[in-house]
Length: 424
Image (cartoon, rainbow, N blue to C red; front, side, top):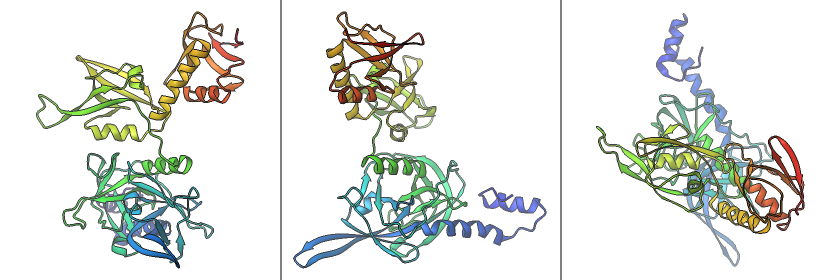
């Protein structure tokens, strides 16, 4: 009965169910949600630590909020705050104090500057509770709660509603996909969670739109799905791997539109990039990405930046009055170069060229030189080399290099029949 997050629908549901509208029943949503989340919210004190003859000298540089995201003691906050110092004290909701631990043996934080997110770690032997993340999409008009440490006032709680989602081109970060709300946040709240009325994280508070330096009715949070992706990439790789398509785009005014609007046009294509190989051309107008309308360059950047490396993106473009659909793989730019070199080395050594099916990641032989070392044909699918299964072009190149560019045997599939092929 109490599943709606809007004040009036809640009261309406109470009244129409025969119950007397009770403000306390509504209050309990906020009280219980805050109680669930508060143990996961910490205060971060940022210091600049310098080495002196007799020890260290600490200078306090800033305060921020952090959110514990897993039981290993990892917590997320904003890069723009932790970048001000080199030593960090973390204080939990119950007053316990911790020193941030070097994550990789050297650095006290790992960061993704493009999204303004940073990852710290504390000793979690005391069992500090990670905050549960919502799996439901956030909705405009939904009640949300922010918990933070504005101006050093620990565990401050404010509430409001979601004003908009998918905000970009705000100028706060390179990749923007913000939740906009009217929740009151101030300096020191950065890195704290934005939660729903179930006490689950829907975002990390990161910025306010202000003239005076204080809250003026608009605040922004990074969606939890982006926070999770960035945090996992930082933990696993020490950086965020981002998909690269290989084109440059620009915004242009849309001619003939009744209201001011823009189109996003491809201005140049990088040779041998996924965009080039996929058939995109300069002048193509990108209308949709993964079924979502592209109304700004920031929207396109946010969609691409939020997808993992190795996945594919569906682009719908307009060209010469016709609509065309493309499916392109997302590669890291550096990895793409390595793979291009690997494909060239494979051809030089064995006389075969390969391509990857972007939907299935199957490796297809696209060309066989007359003097090829293997008796294969165009269209054959490579299943394994040297007994190692292949799933994707990057994996093929990695295995090829691991074996010193020597292929002793290859398994291919031709019309659903598998052959083992040895070099001539």
